[in-house]
Length: 249
Length: 249
Image (cartoon, rainbow over all chains, first blue to last red; front, top):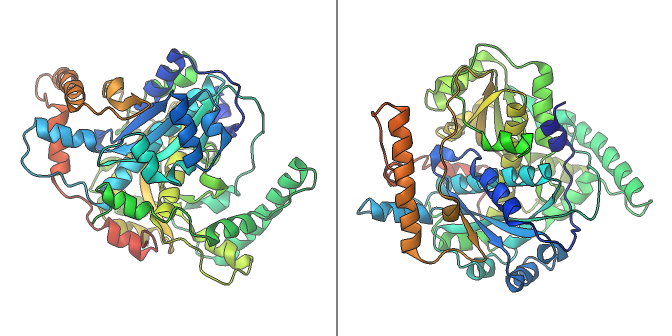
């Protein structure tokens, strides 16, 4: 197993950071690594906002659901889907009509491009001994986040990412059995097979929580995910995306 | 610069592969690395279909726009957003109501989870000396691809990925200037600043094509992207996603 694969397979999110900022050089290395990620049709349909300003970080932290590590970290990034620069490009080319940006396909391209860049950023940061945690919470109040960061039309936040010097070592968390996630040639059709994989995973996860919390928790994975998905969350996203010019057709 | 960062920053897509299949062990290492990627709220809302069957690969290749490397590679993966397993989990928990899966938010979670896993797969593969190329073309005829892979409701293809033993060495392609992609504290508001960055990038890209093609091509980046985004593509995606139970609210 090479060093990079060890790094990938030892990933765990870090939620407690030292009170120490990343150097300019570290930020540059992370961003340049993010930029070299693959991108759909070379569109590079994403942008990254790096937050240094303490006040903006505090505001973001509140908007993201009062998660302390959004404010207390070494650097905070917001990865956005971005087709604003392509509209400027069309102006430069004197293209007389609006670009075709309104489809779900274009939104998906931007979301995928932003995520590919983000994951390269995570791996670059971790390879330098830094810790990371994604923040989906920046979508809790996405309109306010977008205003705070002054994002123009055709730019929308996808994920936040806190990076910093780790102050905890939580260890890896067991994933679903490989055969539940990876199917060959076609999706597994037998629901009983899939359910029995989930039953075995429930045991793994219960045991994991039981040990980690000294018996305080032993949730099943299916219990956790059912509770989480029973409730509507961030229900305003579609309306927000439509205002930004996305998902209209 | 450590080995992992070198790897990230030297990425280039590979579109010509030797006629040699990945070993079982290589596939396992790639999938296990993908599984350790971060995942939103530990939902693990994605699945991976690996294609070994030649006939299915050939069919996929036609559906994806007759790209040779979809059929000729060492292994082909389709990364899907997947909430099917969560509906099985809810049945196991005897939850009496349908889960709240219809929002744009849930689709985005699945798309992001699938992409995080995919990019870990890319990096794992490249660290083993393999080459990779993402295939957005699996969305050209997404309904047919979904039927071919027998994907149930709440499962949709996001990206394809061809992996194999490289038979070309195309070298890296220069990305947008860092300051055009990375903004601090807020999005750059000055359109002239952004446009002058794009003008300078146009020169970089024209020179790059000019050298690579011995003068046959010297497109500007803004020319390329304007042409590409002027036309509607994959216009059926929204309707397809709605049929799958996504983006309904």
